[in-house]
Image 1 (spheres, rainbow, N blue to C red):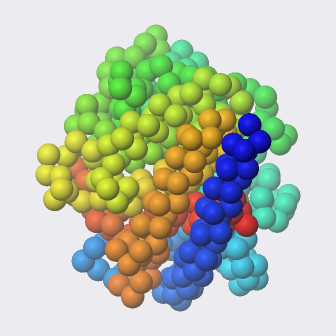
Image 2 (cartoon, rainbow, N blue to C red; image 1 turned 30 degrees about the horizontal axis):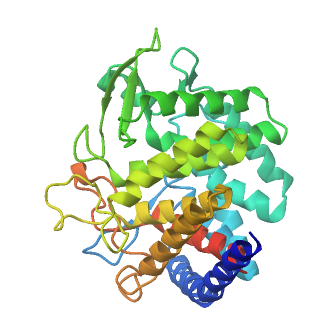
Length: 390
């Protein structure tokens, strides 16, 4: 027993000693890229960088209402946490505050967690600024207005109820539950916790095929709450494994276990992870959809890899089986090493951090592009790896 323990410790030490230089180099590189981007923003009173298309070097900018608006300030907060540069703190604070109106407007869709918790959430974690906390708590209450107790889930797209024929819930919504969990434990209503748990449980029962691959959209009858259909919106087909959707599931159920310690969430997180890992290409960066018939000539999705890497570092912390713990950690590290290679870092091609993400392939938008949420989860994963290996 003692020998096994010492072997495990030795293996972990080997992993940590190899990880640190690569992580710091990647974070230093990320700082340089965001500094370039900061110099390119035309109007800092409203413009937030979202994406750079593969045939361009110019950012497309969005306003605070865009679902991706929280990722840019969130990236700045993580990099401030890394190097404590007061200039980064000032910029992170500024771009976070642009999103403040979301805390007092009626809910446009479920993305309030992405928008507010990635920005103000990281800001509060770094500064404990009470103004940030107020915004987070108010926004959690706004998000909760989309909850349908009959369906047991949060409505994702109010504007699409007619199109989908009912109360629609997308797998992405799992990540917005973190806002509710946090608020319930930091001064908000305890009902927020119950909503988040019920949403996760309902999603676990209704959103997955027998092989634990995820549907993108599940539709419920608005009145009775019964599931009526399961379809895709951004994937290849209704029955295909859309890469980023599966990564949202991996991250979401891992986070739900962290917040609740419910063993069923930990078990499910492993099931949705294992089918994803089993079907990855050799370099561990998924094609945008695992079932695209054009593979290997289909575009990749670095954003899905970044989300998964971040989730796997957390998941490896909760697994008791040493072999599986090591597997998840090794895969996360290998994913980040590949994303940190010249094949995926933007370098001199543009001022984003990563290349080769896919946003909405069926619409032909942000295909093989640099996208702000890929950068965000990449930096987040690097910071997690840095803490784990420090």
